[in-house]
Image (cartoon, rainbow, N blue to C red):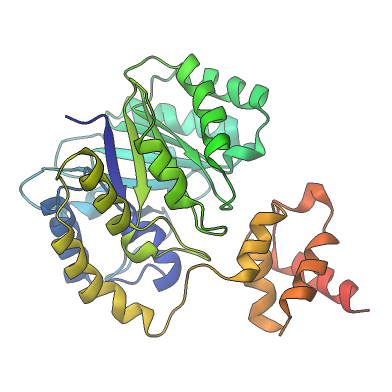
Length: 333
C-alpha cells in the first residue's frame, strides 16, 4: 500500500460555491462513486449545531450522515467541524454506522478551544484530524509549540493548510520537517491547498515525490471547486498519482461526477484563478479582500494592487466585510 492517499473535499469545500446545496441523491451518488473510484478519504460535509435542512451537506448531527453512506465501506468517511459552529456535547459516540473521523478546523486564536474540542472527538471514538488554518501564519517556533500540544492527543492526522494559496514547495518542506521531527511515525500528515497563485498542483507533485516514511494525505476537490481560487483538482492529482505510483484511482468515474454535478454548477457560479486572487497570494492577504471588494465595486487589477498595499501587515490575514468597505472608502478619497 502506498504511503500517499487522496482526500476529496468536494461536498464540503465545494459548498462555499453552492451554499452547501446538493440534492440528497447527488450526495449519495457522489460519496458512493468517489469510494468506487478508490478515493481513500471522503469528506461528506460540515457539522453545524444550528443548521438542519434537506438537500444540504451541512449536518446538524453525526447521525444525519448515516443515510448518505454506501453499505460497502471501502473509504474513510469524514466530516469537518468548526469549533465555533459545532458543540463538543453534540458529538455522539462512534458506532461504525456514520462517519469514521472528524476534521477539527480552527484559527490561531482558537487553539485552546480546538484542543478541548479535539479531546471530545477522541473520547467519542472517532479518528481525529487536526486542521490548523493558515499554517504559514505561524512562525516555525510557534508551529512546533502547536504540534507538541496536538501530539499529546495522538491524532490520526495533522494537516498543513495553505489557506491563502501561496505556499511553495520549500514552505511545505519547512513545516513538514517540523511535524515529521515531533510526531510519532504512525500519525498521518495532510496537505490542503488553494490555487490563488496556481501552486497547488506543483506542491502536490513535490509531495508525491517526497522521500518520507510517514503516510501523507493530499486534499483535493472535483474540478477544484471551492471558495475563491478553488482547490487542487481531484482528477488532476489522481491521474498524476496513477502515472507516478501505479494505477489506483478511476479517472472515468471522476469525470462522470464532474459532468453530472460540477459542470452544471459552473454554468452559473465561478471559482478558480484570477489576477485579483493572485495578488492576495502575492501580498499574503486573505482572499476575501478580493471577493468582498469585487462584490460591490468595479476595481481594476492595478488599483486593487494599490489597495492591498495600504492594508496594515497585521490585518492582511483578517478580513471582515465592513473593514474591507471602510478601507476602500479611505482608498478612493
